[in-house]
Image (cartoon, rainbow, N blue to C red; front, top):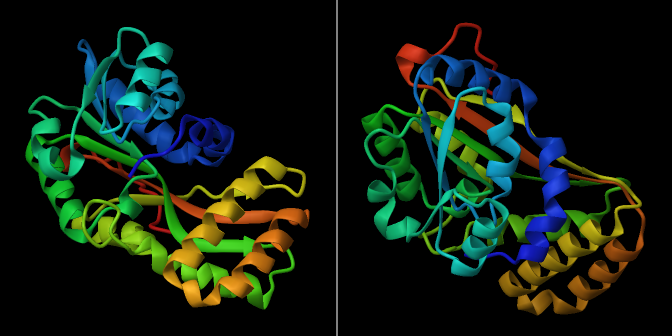
Length: 267
């Protein structure tokens, strides 16, 4: 599944504001110890144009060597332009996951990815992380919550259709969708989870419109017989300046011997 550079640029400031600072601080402390006297090897899965690198790298105190992996060569070309000198690798995450996380990797990270993958794929990721002995940080995983100011029955109906659509095949088999955060906690006990919701204000017209158009398209795809009600909802939701919360979760797993005490609760 691929995304446009325009969409990635539009969502970037919302992503940056939403991300769980407490987990980033925990990872920064871990990386300082793990990377002492050496360069930390980081693999970014589904890296797109490099937004995850741009946000996270300055927040980790260790020296780092990043490898950005994506199937979309156009997005990787933009990543190479934005981050000269970073290793860029085109790769099939579905077929070649294990090969793309080599021995010696210290941290695997991904943004807005694991809600798109199957349970079997996530199992493979968890197994590879354990085998390599690296940390895992996955951020901005959609968790099924879409909450409008003055939520209506029509909003609830679209939300249910969107969440059905999220569980469709996105190239990795039937997707986990909103079940992804719980699935990761089950696969990697000790995973810390924190809320990282998008908070979209009434005046954030471009972001609201992009989301509404995407959700209306997903709803029409999953329930074409309801097109006559979906289109009026799309116009109403685009035009009305209502605040909007889109639920996401950030999750951090550290190798057992590196896990600090006092972990965050699995929210």
